[in-house]
Image 1: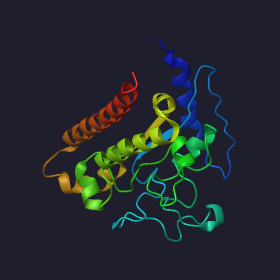
Image 2: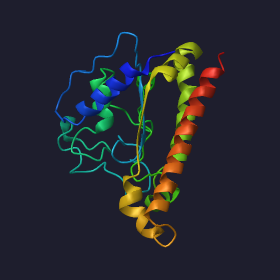
Image 3: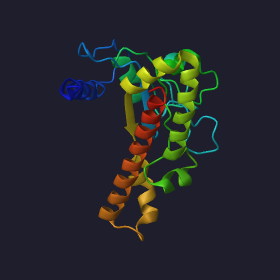
Length: 223
């Protein structure tokens, strides 16, 4: 059985490190000798979106100034930030790559897929109504993109390597800020706060289960 304590400690350290925002990081996280993180997969909302909304008809976009003013070349990339977002910082601190590409990036390269991509969409949330109001990609849509991604990954690196990547990578989910700040105001007649919190928790559980099943099924096909 795998000892989860070193992994948990590593993730705790990682969470603390990404709070320190700097212009450049150098892969400071030192993994235990028996732990390998070949890729990072990111799901969620605008906190971690790296550009998946750029070509959507939605107000939840950030591919225009002043976004990106401190990014490389001062170019707005669809990140809801003046520079990098937590997706980038996590991948960089793990020494995987400097920037986390959006899965829907038009010129996405095969090499980008091998080390992980971002499926997050600004304006999404655990409440299904949130993405409807924001015209963003629902979490269920992000699961479908992940399923599509798995097929592409296996086509690039083969079944065995793809299964290793899926089984050993870091999955990051950041969501629900829009649920609380925006959607709940339209839900107040249906739910009080405890009931709405239960809705979000159940939706989050279902989402994580869906990701787990997609990963498990993909790996099980080789066995």
